[in-house]
Length: 183
Image (cartoon, rainbow, N blue to C red; front, top):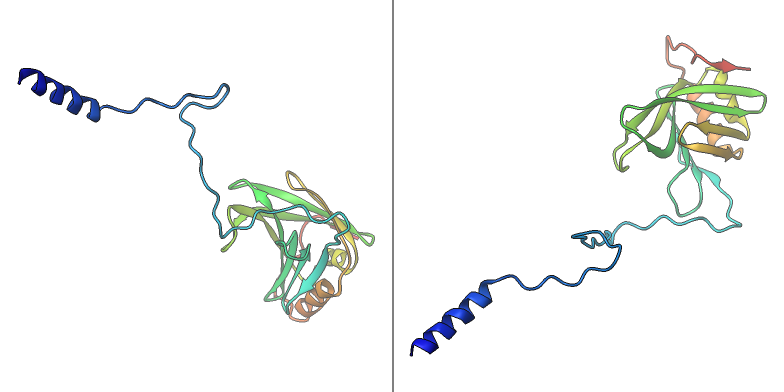
């Protein structure tokens, strides 16, 4: 009887102990855990080699990018002010100059890391009055350079010109030109 009780006690203690750890692969991190990606969020992919980015407009906003993907650049009119957004990640609290050059015009637009509803993280955003002489860079194709955001080649587009034209028709009173504009 004593043997049966000892065996039962030993069996009970064995059942309470941890199972043996699985063998670890060479070079794998200790205690690594696999995490699944959200199913609702599409993975960004590279555009097809022959794909061309283009402007798409919807009234007071124009977006430049590849079909089926998020915008690379957007320009929106808000009460006579052009809100320029470069859709690349920015560090919290960062500030920079977004250098835009094209059509004989140069614009050095101050931009800040901004949290935008519906967008993960922070992206670059700046503004200038639509009647600012520097806004003329948006009349044709231009090139933009942003520290940490790389260079973007932007084609001319009627949706962008239409937004700038409509926004300039409603200038904001007392708006000062952006420093760093050159014709």
